[in-house]
Image (tube, rainbow, N blue to C red; front, side, top):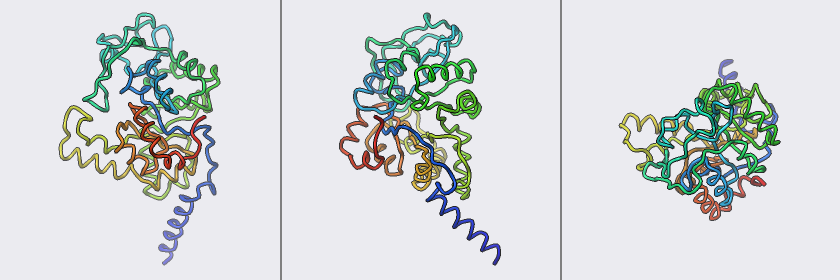
Length: 320
């Protein structure tokens, strides 16, 4: 009887705090909301991580630019996804071993990572830009930075640039690695951080055991893949086995939880799902309560949102 009372009290308290987390936690004060997030600047519409891509994404209505950073041999912070440039330039050049002025140009055509049948054709802008240039070109646009390698100089210089351009409250940074996220937060706790993979798993365990409402969270942005996209034809070049499909379906069931997303939102933590590229995926993400969608096609997502004012109204004021 006593055990039942204890368990019942625990469940009731957990459910209460799940719905009203402000009774225990101070809500995070994030300055902006970004529904339309341009993945690598909108890699399906322009060459990824170029100034042209970023400019186009902003023009068609994205509220956040997502990009990736590395550091060159001469200490320049560059915007590029790959450390080895073979995929995007055709040359086996490693960024950290190369002077910025010697980095090769991006190929004329790049195949999308999350839409294998799509090749984005290049234009006049094939240069790998500096992070400084992006900050200067888009001073008021929130930027989501993936620190691609565990390099102290890179982390320190990204922090210095963020402070220099007065962007601490409209910049997000992190990596899948917990070690990199810890370093980012230690170097500059004023810049909001993403959940690492390990912390995502930790959060999932906390949620399904009822402990999440009791635990403080350092991170401000819960950025995860929507596993169902892995099962769609045309997304990836090779088919998955039946066991792999069962695994991805299970991951989707566990990760896509409206109650969990709603709880995080009440704590001021925004949920971003990636990388979604068609209306069906957008619809499903918003059904589960995602705050933002990372897409290779920001103009496509803008058109979707134009026809769904209820979604924009649901999340209140966008970044302005």
